[in-house]
Length: 378
Image 1 (cartoon, helix red, strand yellow):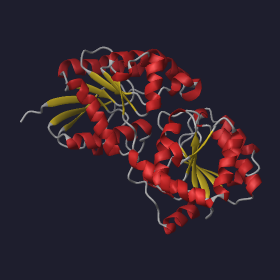
Image 2: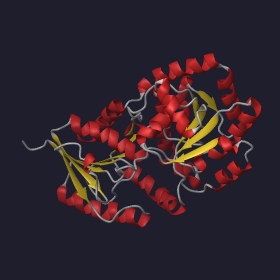
Image 3: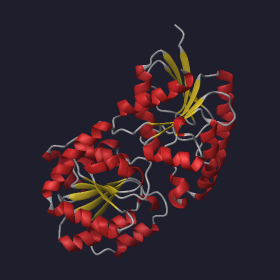
Image 4: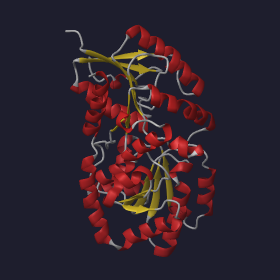
């Protein structure tokens, strides 16, 4: 029987062992959507050789379009030439973009997942040549597509305000957390602490190292926490060095307690989940997030959360977290000290977090994204 629908999907962020924000979202949602809808033909559009593990079933066909799109000029060629030609020839019922982009040179109906507009708020959130492209084309993408999915009410309001998009054109599809994240046994926690922090308890930060993530103030806050508390806890930073990291490096060198700061670099998904699960608390004091997945991952792991009280983090954390002004180093320090002293509060936050994380699952995300697509193609 011929498939009832044909949906093309931009899957260029499905990179084996290199999944980050867009990649995880793409993998988790498409895996569920394609398996729930075997009657639909999905065409995954890659920009380079792909890993077969991302071909989730017999209803998924892989197509490699050139050139490899990792630079603004190549983005333009990939979307507006190669993809446009493919769409014209193959005529899918829908083109779904998982990364906020779209094809301007097509009449095919489109949905894009516009995760956030961080680049509109922070010039240093991405590299300068990428920033110029994004600020020029993102508003065009937003107006071109038939519907937009985004990952928080905050991001929805931001898109409405910045790009003058009608609110009823945008659907909120919250992120989920990988099932690798769970409450660990004490023996597992001890093993991780022996591996990374000489057996000591630790605060954990998860994410790439660049200015918007506010790692500099986190380091300064931790240094003051160590001075005031006399604690032997450490700070574990899990993630790759991105760009503009000189401030972070300089801050570490100036710290009194720099020996208690541990950078792991990039680790596997399995190892990351263990690093989070064994932590005393998560410190996620970013200056801007469209969602903030590490907050939910920590909650799912039974780990209390300190997070920022701005952008989407206020919405995601609610009363299941300690929320601080990320621009005030003293507030971050005080939150660490508070968790150190108030064990009852820490226990309460763990229980509230385990309840709150139930609102964010990839099953729900996939269903809401599918519903968004169906609003376009019926």
